[in-house]
Amino acid sequence: MIRIVIINDASVARGGATSLAKKQAQMLVERGHEVIYAAGDSDPGEAIFPNHTIALRHAGGAALLKMNKLAAATRGFYSGAARDMVAALVATDTPETIYHVHSFAKALTPSIFSPLRRVAPRVFVHAHDFFLACPNGGFMDYNHMLPCERVPLSLDCLSTQCDKRNYAQKLWRSARQATLRQTLPRTAPWGGIILIHPAMRAYFERSGYPPHLLHTVRNPAQALSARRVPAEKNTQFFFIGRLEPEKGIEELLRAAAAAQLPLSVIGTGPLLEPLKAAYPKVTFHGWMDREAIGRVIGDARALVMPTRYPEPFGLVAAEASLSGLPVILSRQALLGPEMDAKGIGITCTPHDIGNFAAALKRVAEMPEPDIAAMSHAAASGQAGLCTSPEDWIDGQLALFEQALDGQNLDRRQAI
Image 1 (cartoon, helix red, strand yellow):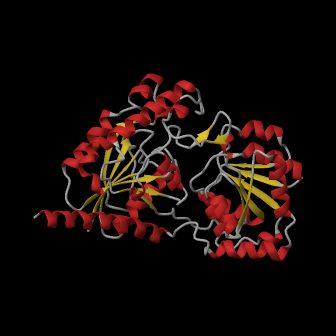
Image 2: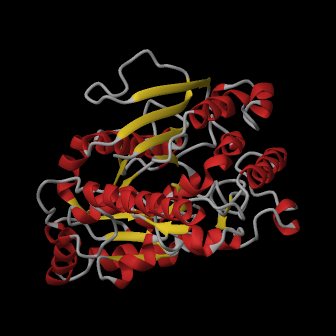
Image 3: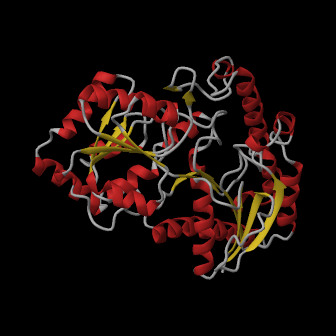
């Protein structure tokens, strides 16, 4: 039995990283392991794991967006409470304990890695995004809505305003990234950084992480629909996601209008109301739960994911693909070239509306046997875009056991 301390910003799931951290905790307990779940937030006053015996710890913090500006600028930079919570857990360390960090940028801060250095060979950090490597977490120049090729914290990086808000925010995030490099030094013998897509490796190496620390364990995903969606019989294109500029939704609406193709949009966000007003012919469903999405996409010809930044995974793309939908992806999305090469999707250049519209029309006009073949290939799951939940846990446990075996070998050799 392994003792696993899972460390994550939140205990209530409002995003993908927390959902996966909680899924991991539950599945590890079901495998017979001991789990402690340490969160950066306060006790929410509800049962976090009602059906599992999992010890909880809370640092009592809040997400940066919920703090006032002064608190966010100070406690959001380095949290003493989060550091102390993790230090207390390390004080009860055993030789069979693994520490697994998920999200840390919203409440926990880089402070948590200072006490974790004492047990570095048994510490794993899950890279759900690029916050471990890039100040704004996306290798994205939000000012120009283009992927960023700069070396993080280089003079070129520091002198560029790439943040969603302003240059002051960029400098603050750069200072936090510099703090992270102090608390999580690249040269320390960490257990590893867990990447969710192999193409993330180049970005982390650009940021100075040694190749031997980087391991890929793809995210789990399951089909949105119990039966394959007969894409070859359908005409409707779908977008599923948050309505923000970097998701490419504005470009998609212009391209769909240019191609004169029907489009349905599932999701909410700051652009919802202005886009509804500007595109009255588009169907805006708003937020929908997973079951409802599974019903609605029965009319789908394809899913469109026109993200403008190098999105590491794109859960909705994997789920839609497993449901039998061809996917039209941005070339910037890490899944894009992979899905294109495996014949279950095509890539496009979202900021080139002509190119984007042509990609949509290509799928709309594709002969029925061709799109049926693409749909069946996607639904088979043979492309290997994701893992099953069981394989996902197996992949992590293999890394944990390797770290423990290496530590035990070092201990034997020292005797």
